[in-house]
Length: 204
Image (cartoon, rainbow, N blue to C red):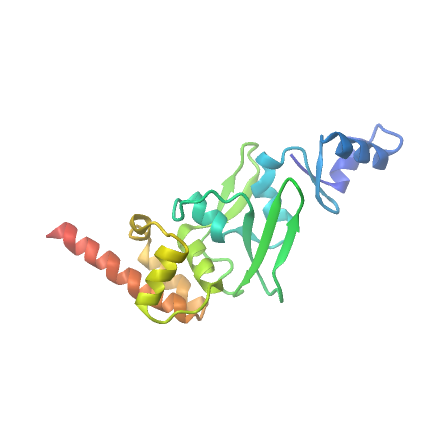
């Protein structure tokens, strides 16, 4: 369960010294302070929700979302999240959880973000797989050629080619102009060709 200070004060209202009670619960490990005013009783269960709340507005994206969708093979323990209008990246970290926040264009921010629920039924937001790829390529070093793009996708980031072929071209065509990125324009040209060729092969 995720708590702010007001919720903890309500939870421990029968105690004379509520702040002392919170301190003792932290010391026992019954609650974990993520940052000032934000606590969790189960980091493993609450991670997705915490990532949205800790720095807002935000949603899970980049490596964490790509791992979730099986587009990259690695398990990603840190929560990598998208935000906007920030001059620099933000990080929150302790021995229980690490959260990274990276900025994308404001107009792209609300598009194709999904609402999911954790084990307790609490909602959190995560990028669709198309959105997570756009976010990721936006922050990577720029490439203009399809040859260089393929090195980035399959050598540097180890994208799964079969998953790439399953992407929704219509979603990408709507998303990509909002990023104003040469890398993403190159990616769209490449993926459109790959998907079109795959469809042609199936039909022949």
